[in-house]
Image (tube, rainbow, N blue to C red; front, side, top):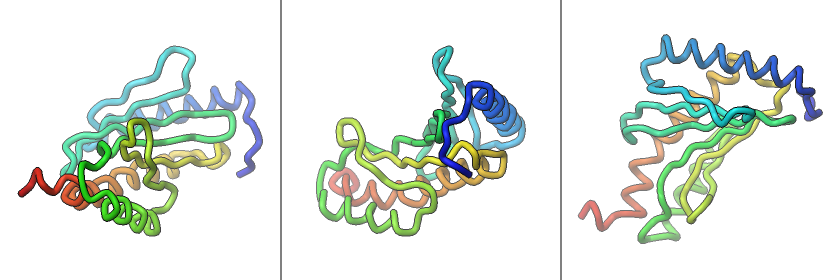
Length: 153
């Protein structure tokens, strides 16, 4: 699991592995609603998941020379109780493996992570997708009730 840059041929091989794994997920995993690819020439996948606490969300996988980056949009910036909201997410970060809550564009909350490309295989892809699903499902409702409490009053 080095952090060396992979060659184009190695990335092509890994891209085929990810494509095959995602095809299997589409065929067998009822949580996976849709799998789309990025623009031609991009090594990017969009995996739309059916949730329970959050109806749907998309995990973006981006294969780079050294890492597989993954992220999902969790929710917009909180409307109220900012300190408690961000404290809640930072405390949740302590319990997460391979991902962390982050502030992104327009101060929205994202869940992000990355893995060295040398570690990418079907087992790790399963772990990543399952973890992203579980983390969003576990945090979404409690965070929503803190940062948007007046909407539930």
